[in-house]
Image 1 (cartoon, rainbow, N blue to C red):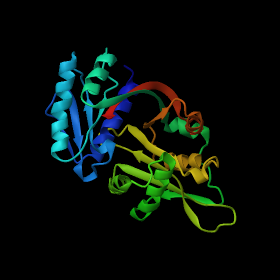
Image 2 (cartoon, helix red, strand yellow):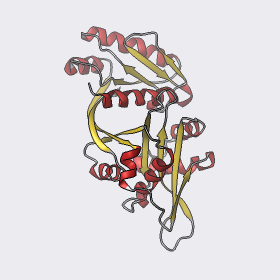
Image 3 (cartoon, rainbow, N blue to C red):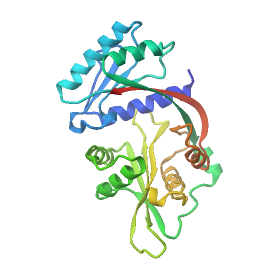
Image 4 (cartoon, rainbow, N blue to C red):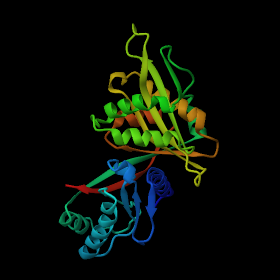
Length: 278
């Protein structure tokens, strides 16, 4: 297993830990991240499976035992299987989760990485467009950030969990959120948040950075604003000797091109195996 995959997995575990209220480590086969204060947010309530039992009965026991802990505090878990698991019997695991009322997704993400030297070689982030500016977000930006992310990712109106998540991240010294404000059109003097980037720099992994989210409101897409926002964020935060990582769906080619323009390179693939209630 490559170092890039291990780094990506560790960064995602740090994200789960930051978003959760409690992490339970009493089982050798999984880590349970629980946050009943944000019960509707999947990343705040996730069981990360480190080792899969060798038979269906063992997997069912794992599911039922961990479900009880989550449901005791009023939350429904989502399950994520570690990409570091070797020799996984996918059919057996799928059958076990299905018997407990879960569906499974098997996806492959691209892992992209960028060092400060890679970023500097691109010359990205040299300046702002006349009608836009990039700055660090504040708690006052949370309502607009919720609207931006909900529109970009199709979350709809049920986004109270997103408000809770963003508020917590803005208060976390390990997290930096950058926003770009732009006019809706050339004749409009009023600016709104058009693009945002969330960077995570876990204290225990000072040599790594995680681009947690990069999003642009649909009304402002295809204008280069996302590139401008992430370029300014990396220029401000990515240090010499540090490597930034992100994961992106392999079919989203326009996002890959944007990241490549800031120095990111495709370095590995990441198996994303998740289970969620049917």
